[in-house]
Image 1: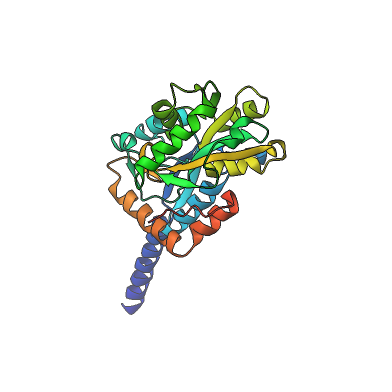
Image 2 (image 1 turned 45 degrees about the vertical axis):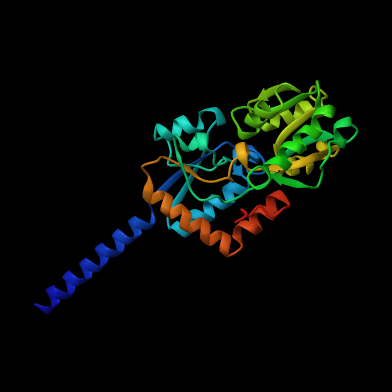
Length: 281
């Protein structure tokens, strides 16, 4: 009898162990653009790399799930999430009121100012405010004054920006009567047009601009003008999820908070952006 009891207990323990292992192997499928360096990009051999790839793997480890990271074109990234092709988005996506109408977000895991990339011999290199940052949320009047100060130099210039982003919305809202806006599918495309002289400037996040500067072919690019935060530019970059995935949001929030507290996000952002992109509290 004791032998059978021992065997039964052993089988029960084994079933718990197998069940525990299965729980550990749950997969969270995360979409990224794969064309927004250094947030995310496609490296040698088609491998996805960048700040968000490293961070996604770190967050999944904290959540005790397996990461599956897939590339998805930016213009279809939210519709594909809603169609349940994946569970979450980590693609340099800022929290905005408009996006919150259709999806939910984790707490922010990164935030950088947004601004101008221009060639150093361009008149736009003298856009006022370089090295400073202003927030629409904390100083709306200061932000508007900074934009007005740019307009005399920007008048009639052609500016490249990635379409369907907070950056394109910013230009449409504040500068469409001053500049010619040229939208691109990816930031890589407008970067190339800048160096080719087909556009006068690009407007993007400082993290992306700094990464572009690191490339030898962009050594003549500088970041000009006042850096902008908040307002239409959003409340930081976060994980996008479907509204009904409440438990997944809680898991991401907990993991992100831990990654902020132990300095992981600071370390990863300094590695990829050369600046600390930890969200301001």
